[in-house]
Image (cartoon, rainbow over all chains, first blue to last red):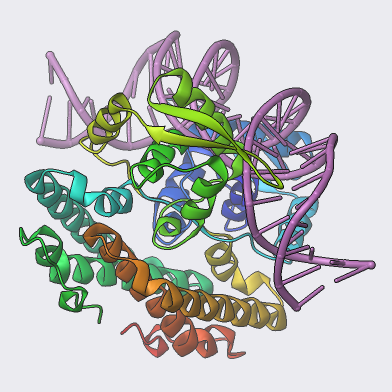
Length: 182
Length: 182
DNA sequence: CCCTCCATGTAAGAGGTTACATGATTAT
DNA sequence: ATAATCATGTAACCTCTTACATGGAGGG
């Protein structure tokens, strides 16, 4: 899905401004399958409004810049439902981190160790943040993706913690059997 | 990493043509963290050659189009090693599949079921293919990413298999406790 | 005093995708 | 027959990223 479809999906949960959509997309479980910036959202909303899939109205605020609150039109809701019937494109992951692990024999061991520890800490922080969000996830699909994401982060943390020693060891021969794949 | 860095990484394993690089990038464990097409690879190689990071020579072949075999220059190897010292950008996943699961209350149950079964079958096929590749993965970093990917696919397959019933059930109330998160 | 939050947008550029163009060989 | 493999590339397009532009409120 592109930025436009994501905006439609966010608005299907209720009317919102571009800024609020961005906040929603940045939180779990939305953030598990996409990563969208202001530079995509604002133009997407403008175009969706032109196409009649959303309507927006500027609202004056006290001591704040004006806010443009958008909501789905009937056409927008139909368009969103239709896009859900398309066969999903294959998942695509872009991971510098896995690239570094892949190339680890070309890297100084100390730096590699730092990168892995940093990643484990990042995952830990993510999990902590998810704990604080967990109560607010009520919809069934949202809960499913939320728990899938949480389980994935736990899996990744455990895999890295268990096997970092194997990757970082100085021995020239590293038997694949040493990897604990669970 | 962009297409240029990926080409450098592929060539660090030995000289290759654009076509051969594409094949390498499409196989595990390379395919676990990127997804690069001909339309990115050929222009990337042209530019890398202009920058002196790779050298290419056309080789005539019998009954085949000419082949341009590229190899890393010293400058190219240095450039690659330097790029490994940069802090890695955050991982980014784009998943239509998770988007569909997220929106599953807007979807016909039958279609949702099909999408999930298809995904499980795809993962099963991927795992079978990885089994047939496993012996050829010798480098330590390659093995690490390979096993991480394999474990991830198994995790995803198991999560979907265990919990699809929970997502697909007709009951209006679906207790989060019903999810088996392992 | 500085940072983060609120709030919107544009403009330029980088990067990637898709379709097109070509064509013999080999396997089913 | 038909599809896949081998083999390279270009051009148009689309999308996204990044930087810029603006500015008050409130917390540390």
